[in-house]
Structures are given as C-alpha cells and as structure tokens.
Length: 161
Image (cartoon, rainbow, N blue to C red):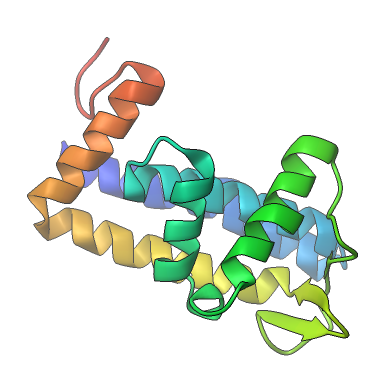
C-alpha cells in the first residue's frame, strides 16, 4: 500500500502542480506558474515536516529542501512576500515578482526579490523526488506522513475513515 501511495503522491504532484506550472510558464504566464508551484510547496511542507504551524513548516521546508532558499532571509521572504501575499491578498507583496527572464531560481534586484517559477518548480520537484525516496526506506517519515494525513483529513494511508 505504501508503494502505491508514493507513486500516487508523485503522480498527483507532477500532474496537478508541475505539469500545469510548466504549461503556464511556456505560455508566458509566470504569475500563474508561480502560484501553482507555491501551492505545491505548501502541500509538500505539510507532508514532509508534519509541523502544524504554517510558517514554521514552510520555513523549515524551504531552508532544508530548496537549495536557493537555504541561506539568508530568502526563505522568510518567500513565505511572507510570495506565499502569504498570494494566499491572503491575491498578490505578491513588497514589489517582489515572478519572472521567466532571470537565469537563477531567485535573485534580489535593488532589494526586490524575483523568483523564476520554472527554476523553483525544478527545485520543488527535486524535493518531491527526495521525499519519495525517503519514504521508501524511512519508517519514521512514513509514520509522520500518516499522522499528518490523519490530522488533516481523518484518513490513514491505506485505510478508510
């Protein structure tokens, strides 16, 4: 059952988030692509960390799983300006923006944070691959994920309500 779940998790994330984000980016819609990728970050942060407090889990995930946000205040700014701006206000705050024109995942240009949603999707996809690999051999990681699913949805992996 765990193998089926891991495959389903990977397929769902790739189909629901990454595939659509890449399609949006290819059509020149950086904002839409970024929104999809950040939604995936939220979901993976919850599943991987098991932390209930949103900010704490988001920062822990970004700092440990997204190479471009591991140092400095970049994870904090990703959370505050991008994630919170989008979720709570439907906009990116502090002048920050998504751009398909920068070569790196994140750049700061004159104090303004710019994120390339394609590069961010690549990093999040790598984090998903690493998480699925961890689930294959780490019983505690599977238990943490199961507890998160029960807390959030009332359903354990492989069991009905």
